[in-house]
Amino acid sequence: MKVLVINSGSSSIKYQLLDTETEAVMVNGLVERIGEEVGDLKNKAFPGTENEVVTEIQQPIPDHNTGMRLAIELITDPEKGVLKDKGEIGAIGHRVVHGGEDFHKSTVITDEVIAAIEACVPLAPLHNSANLDGIRVAMELFPEAPQVAVFDTAFHQTIPAHAYMYALPYALYEENRIRRYGFHGTSHKFVAGEMARLLGKPLEETNMVTVHLGNGGSITAVENGQSVDTSMGMTPLEGLVMGTRSGDVDPAVHTFLARNKGMDIEQIDTLLNKESGLKGLCGMNDMRDIHAAIEKGDKHAEIALGVQTYRNRKYIGAYMAVLGRVDAIVFTAGIGENDDIVRRESLKDLEAFGVEIDQDANAKRGKEPFKISTEASKVAVWVIPTNEELAIAREAREVLSK
Image 1 (tube, rainbow, N blue to C red):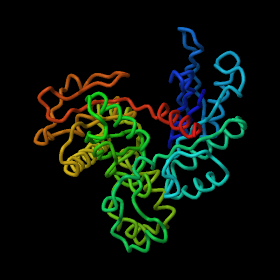
Image 2: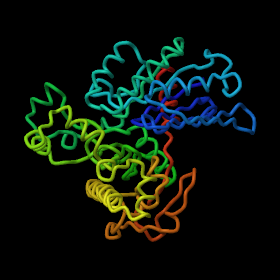
Image 3: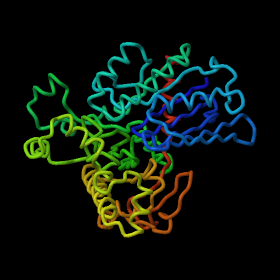
Image 4: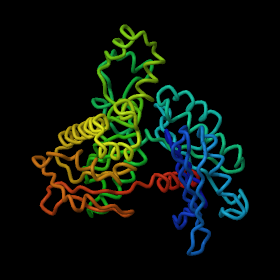
């Protein structure tokens, strides 16, 4: 079965076409800087020869709908693509950020499922709308292919009540399902499985802290292979300092802004989700730009890096306390895999917890997993490239095989 995986993020779209029998990648693409002055699209097609066909496009990409259409046009292009007929696609798997309490596992997309995903848009304002754009465009362009939704919240359904409940009147949970859900579950689940394999231990006997750092970020405590706590909450706004999201703030900030700045609830929501985080602190939300600015002496950029990595370190330490025994810490996603400075600062002064980093190893980059802790470190620290697309393709195949 050939599965087209669509992973639509807050400012990017990753997509892959995979043959699920061999798990070989037929097309690999990335749309970046959506909504900025100039967007980037890079498409790599693997037509069964040693040579890949690379197509790069730079043009304004105002929204996810435009980005999705550009990507699908390339996949089916007679010269640059790999498909002769759209009917070759056996299924399309979609990453969906928020499933609320309606979805505890992956599911075939129907009109009812779309309505339920749309109902969760207020819980994930930066993502669920983008996910729906991908679903609707794919359903329009591939009407015969079954579509499967794979939810970021599913892996975190094992979190116990003492970790997912907020200390609010219980009726708010009963009536409105206000609770912590967690996100990036597909990524956390994938790297947890890979980490256990690399350690040579059964997943169900392995404890670890998984650190997913990209434009959005979250950290998860994994106990015996199951998520028992995670930094994001009812929405992806809670937790770490992210590209444009504030992460944890005093809840009274909302009241203060309303009373002293005259802001209404929509303005406050926009402020916290789209104008805060790294962008709010220094005007930039791309870590590459922030490092370049720091080298030029930009103090705001330096502060932003410090605020973010300090928050990362607090969560890592907290989850080490939650787990007690920690076999490994795993860094993944765009920043986690490629930014040795963020990794170094996020693990700063954790030697008392048995974490010792080999700075030479940490400075390297690679497409394969690599260890960055010393041999003397009591806790193994690894960088493991996430593969959410492969995980989603596997989920889609499993759902349709039932």
